[in-house]
Image (cartoon, rainbow, N blue to C red; front, side, top):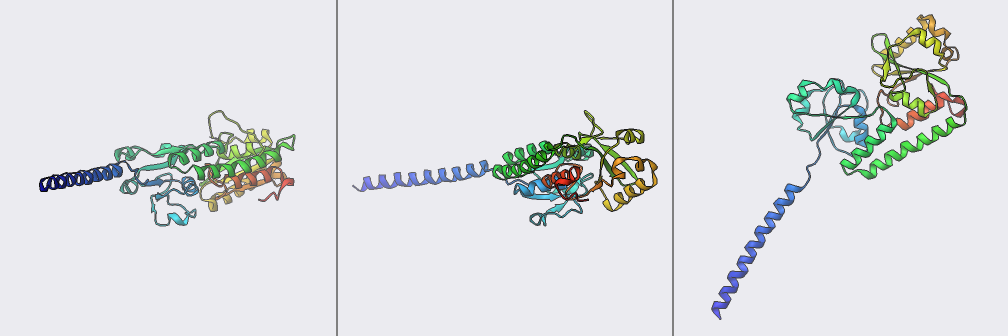
Length: 301
């Protein structure tokens, strides 16, 4: 009897040891398979806006005059979007670094040397913005937030399209992007603002199959006779807008343009407008629609 008890005790002890070892193995295996918490760096404000809408954590944000959401107050500033600091980004040991396709050429050898491969998001149109939101929502398990964000954009998009459909004739629109240093470029239908104009029912007087921006040409502008001019102050608006004003006063060509004659010249400024699509797209669409068809809204300047 005593022998039986001894055998039973040994078996029970063995079972407990095996169970404990299995528990440790399963625990370690589960920890190994558990996905790492994302450490994301956003190098442009547009990407910050998307991350905020999707409730994503950020360890790095761009150095910008735009108001960074409170949830990212303690995130590291990694420098200007056009020239972010490789050293600061590398020190954060990020799981992903995001920029936009229009700035792809700015990320050179320094990033490759640190083995950092940024992801470049296509934000050249409202449609590409929605695709990007949906894709990131899926990747980071934020499909609910992504669907809500896309739904909001769709709502405003449908509203401005409905306004445009009530008008048989589309206004001719010229889009200028100002650059610090008394210069500007013409934004074509391939640009983000050009896409806003197209959705809102405008006719961009300068179209291209491949280029977002082209060099200005006075004779071509005069011939196009734009009825509305949109001036994008992408960088340093305090400098660019006065440059635009000076240009329009000093060059007699502008006095011949219908948009200038009829006082239909509007400045596009942040946060509603930028060179790339962002989460202010719904507000931007509504404003552009009011400018193109002022009888439908306030026609705010």
